[in-house]
Image 1 (cartoon, rainbow, N blue to C red):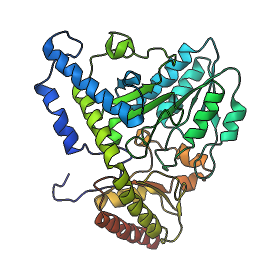
Image 2 (image 1 turned 90 degrees about the vertical axis):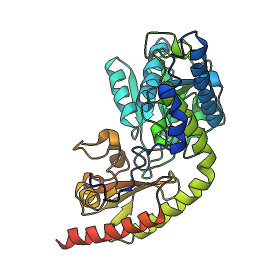
Image 3 (image 1 turned 30 degrees about the horizontal axis):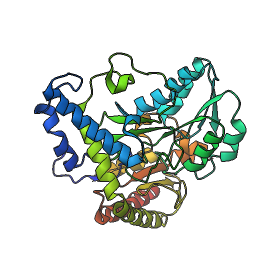
Image 4 (image 1 turned 180 degrees about the vertical axis):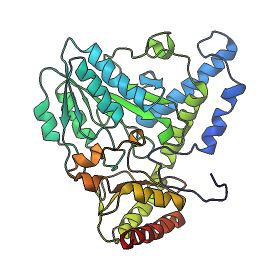
Length: 383
């Protein structure tokens, strides 16, 4: 990379830079407090205490009990554990799971795996804004339904789902409700008690923490099988030596993100709405998803008549980082399953780009990107 080249990073939904305060909090646990938290020495007890402090920060952030917080390697493991663990634990009761058509691959591919094991999966459709059909979920429930898993906020179009209503439906039918909240945590308020959430997945690198660490919240009393087998870590629920530094980082990151959230969201929504307003002045552009019911820093635009990959490469040459959607689907030649679920044609789906803003996105960067988009699209269409 050219060190003199200024990078404008507009791909915060893919991953966020680690916050310096988070990194500073982690540093001592790489070399100074390096004991195994499962050991019995006083030295190791200090390390275990740091993990407990981080657990407390997570519990406070989402309003749950400390003992309901289980550290994992990230969102993918948490999603797999939630689905597979519940399916195995409740297979005597039933074999039916309900999810949505716009879930992250960590959910959809796990559902496909469970289908191979004989489980029945119902994929609830969404409307043109990416909001799941509640009536469809109600009608899909049977006596064999053991789990509903619907994401909190979509990673591509930023749509925020009616989580409270889904939680109520599940509670009234005595069904476990899991939500993949990887894109939501640290960006919008999440209260698992108020929203009737039984299980929730999160990943630290989406809210300015380190990669490779996440959480699965499991409400006390929920029956779930272990996903990893081995030692007695995480109250014998999740085996493996704890990644102390990363856990400490996650704790600091969620604490700081929640404190910063009110003011930061006002700023981001201002940048987001101005960006949308200006970009939609470009001929043949459309916003994917709802204007208001979306994550504060998410914008997904269809540039009709322009291939997204071509536009992305041109932006990259100008130092602007954006994406065509989920980083976990990068390299796929298939159009986005999320955009296709909204009713977009394959051509429109392949002409759409996601821009996602974060705490270091500036107004100057937004202005530059708008100018470059207009210039690039004019050149493409004139050429």
